[in-house]
Image (cartoon, rainbow, N blue to C red; front, top):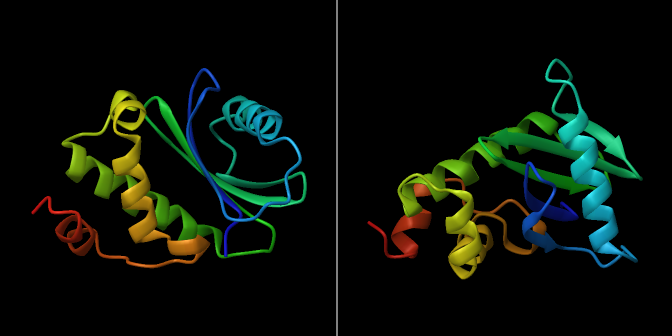
Length: 137
């Protein structure tokens, strides 16, 4: 089970956040520190690391960073694949998703995430089925 999912732009502004556990005292400050850590990492470093007791997996997509955090060790490569699935699904739904799609159609992003990751547990892994459920195919 994951603890949080974040979508952050390169200016460290959170565009989407979903917390599956309630153990953070100040989520805004946490998001700021985590996004700065992800952005400042050199490109030759791996895409997962430990941060304040969480196992963090992130993946850059253009101007966005998708970040998943868990309080217990998980299969990092599986979460990287899941982030790829999330981005592919959003690309198909929004016809090449941009940061503005996430900002102005936030409820659609919530619906996609709820189908792919219900209650922080890996759910549907077929983007076609998710898009069919959302009425886009």
